[in-house]
Each structure stands twice: as C-alpha cells, then as structure tokens.
Amino acid sequence: MSTLLEGRAAELLAAPNFCVVATLRADGSIHTAPVWVDIEQGLPVLNTAEGRSWPRNLERDPRLTMTIQNMENPYEYVSIRGRVAQRTHEGADEHIDRMAMKYLGQERYPYRQEGEVRVIIRVSPEHVYHYGA
Image (cartoon, rainbow, N blue to C red; front, side):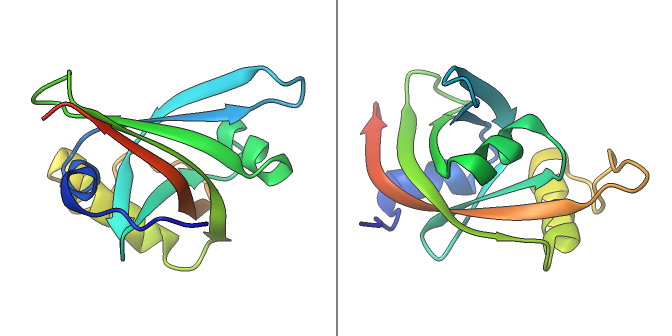
C-alpha cells in the first residue's frame, strides 16, 4: 500500500538534501549510493543514468530504502521503504536539469556523459519514518 509523503517528510525531499538509496545486489548484499531526490505529487522521484549499479538492481528487485538527512540538522532524517512505481526516460533530461538548479544552482546538469541515457524512477512508499525535528 502506497503512502503519500506530506508534512516534514515532504519538506525534506523538497529541500536540497541528499538521499542514500539502498538496493539489493543479485547475491543479496546491500548496495548504497548517494543521489539527488525530488518529490512530485507526494511521491519520491529519483533521476539516474542507465547502466549504473543501483538502477540495475531495481530492475531485478524493485524494493529499495531511501534515507534523506537534513543537511542543516543531521540528526533529522526521513527513511522511506518502498518499491519502484514507474521507470521512464520521458522527461528525464529536463528533470535532471531541474535537479541541477535545486542542488547546484545551475540551469543545466553539468556532468552529462557522451551517450548517457537518463531515467526517472518514481517510488511508491510503503513505510515512512521521520526522526528529529
């Protein structure tokens, strides 16, 4: 059952706070990666490039855990367990440019690689835990 993010949890995703995404490798071990995060209509949104480890892990097993820590108060965070709700290339280049503005203050994402294919991953939260205030 999906939970929409609201209140302080939503605020932490809307602010330029980093997200650590945890996925499961094929051997069952945990893989983590720090990423940028966004929120749209109460759901977490991630943007990455095809070929990276953590999105490949999600193709095999759609479960993930996200931890978003408040950059201004590291004792406050939100932890989200959920599943991939949607994976799309549509609008991914424009979305990463918006994320570059949010996190870097730049109009265009400056780290694009030749031939890179961006992908948006929308997450359906199943459990949300907020700590601190």
